[in-house]
Length: 135
Image (spheres, rainbow, N blue to C red):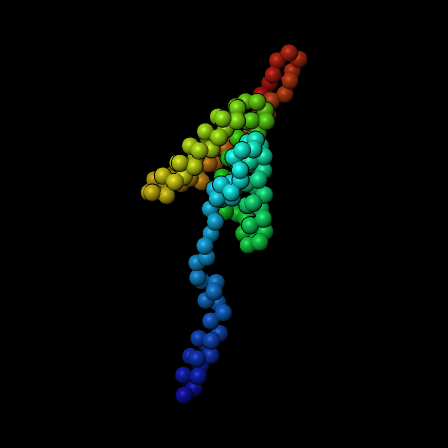
């Protein structure tokens, strides 16, 4: 009898933890950007995607997932702002990265996050030196 009572108490005690073990639907980082209008400038579009992601991250208190994708968007945005590439090129690179990520889910050896980290790299900062530009 005591043994059954202990098992029942243990089972009831574990019940609240079961919610922690059940998978929750996670929004892909890409979807935060998908929710933004593409009829805006690239800079506004990136800012919108980042705002959407931040709001969701703060609500779920989990902001570490896919920071590389956001870094890739930031890198593209910085390149556009510095006039190194145009908005159409930035959108093409974003689309290509997205397609690579979707292909990666199909079984590619490299993860989309690894490619995003590789593509984002470190931003290059240039300074004017007289009549020339030093990077």
